[in-house]
Length: 81
Image (cartoon, rainbow, N blue to C red):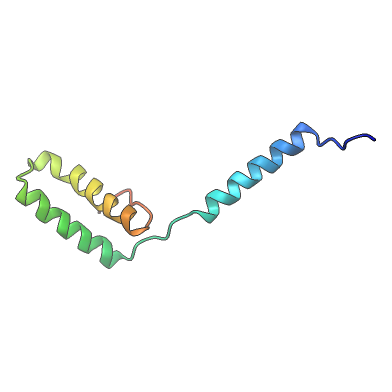
């Protein structure tokens, strides 16, 4: 009795397809604008309290907002403009 053999290219195609499907299924939702604005305001307050230099505030705000968005299950943002 001969075992059926699946060509390597077919296995590779199946593997790549399953990876693509898992990534698209795991896509996170975008946060509502009002939530992003609220998080940005809260992060600004932290920056003021921590007396961050003005040159560091922009990157701090983006990191701070994105950390909170991640914790809330939302997609990260690339800009706060």
